[in-house]
Length: 391
Image (cartoon, rainbow, N blue to C red; front, top):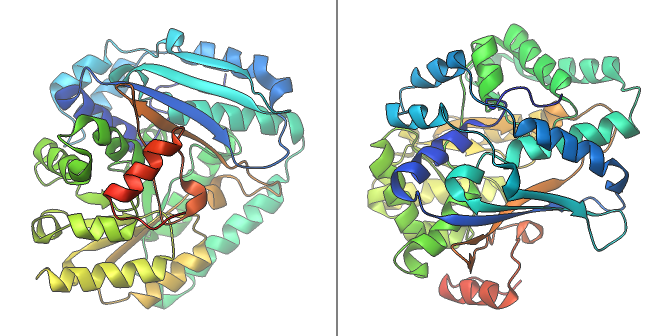
């Protein structure tokens, strides 16, 4: 069994889920899976994937897991009480062969509150089923040696005493066994350079900090839930601040691209939020623009945190750390390069929200290949409303 605990997911799923319970309990959504890696044939493994999802839907939170969540300062008691009754509704997910050769379709439809936790474990299931079939003899020692080399780039450099890196690789991990080994090794050997993990189960088990705030789906859903489309980003940030009252203060900047984000991220948000997370486009240009924006809005950049998490490697993170040293706080989340670097090409798979309350929603990031929407007319309208350039 691949997923044995409902905590085996990213923290931001729970932080968003709590907002859904308190502010949008009636929202109805649809998610769709997509594999961006060409020539990957997952059809032979459909039955295995279905069986693992069936087992996932039988899980419930244990009392020790609920007690752990109660101990997180931003988790509210009514939300944890709700999780005590929660299970994944199997009737809300379908897995089938796709229209094109080798492709599969995974569709999740249902109440947002009851379907939000599907994404991460389902992607982890697809990954592990695929790799245990096509890579029966993984190069474990080569992977361990590469991991050692990556860590030593940080620990051997005296200039990187304040360097902080977190593990963000649940959804695209090679396997849960390798994922856990990565976290255990980083904790043991990197000391204070290891900031923690996005995976709540591993954070609980190995007593490291769980990390995460909001994901793209939250801002996407607000396109349908807010008062009007143009104000959806402002609405999302205001509801988040209302829920967490200054906690979990890292805003996600790339649902509509950096230009649109900065137009909405005014002086109020600059001072209210602790920082922002980069997830597409040139990270150096993004950071420079954000620091200039803080200065223009009378916020001291040295008090703000820039979080980088887009397809990072340790060398790239070190380069960014040295570039922005002394000008702001900075941290890094690295996923696939840590949890799926065993000599085989990782799968570029995602499962994105495409509709909320029957209305199409979209992410239009600074990386065109990350745009995902099933309604071209809506996507064109969204670009017009947010003054986005043509694709």
